[in-house]
Amino acid sequence: MSNYPPGVTGLEYAIAGADEQAMSRALECEGCGFDGDVDGTLSSYGDDAWFDAECPGCGRQVRQDLFGYWADVRRDAAEQAAVDAWSER
Ligand SMILES: [Zn+2]
Image (cartoon, rainbow, N blue to C red; front, side, top):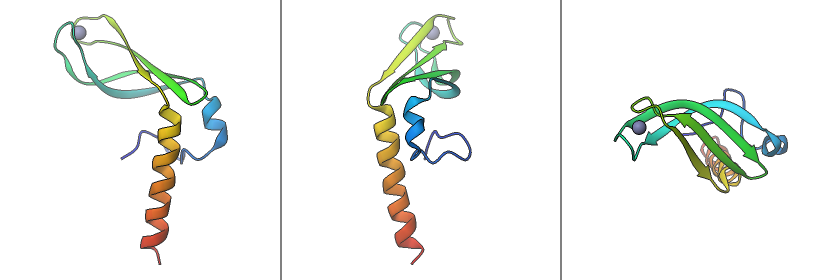
């Protein structure tokens, strides 16, 4: 499971400097009870990121703060690479 765009491993150092990209994420709206995936924009600053989207249920703007997002992405990628390397032996 990953949220990388195709061709991105998450190991690229430059990824920490990525500013904005479109993506979809799970959203639970406190306002209207919507619970599902929404399309929005992921913005990054260093290892932190935040996701802005508009709730399809009520139309309000929601933001998810994702502290340490890219650190988690890199850690998950490193763990997956280790698993892959082990299973290919
Ligand atoms: Zn809503």
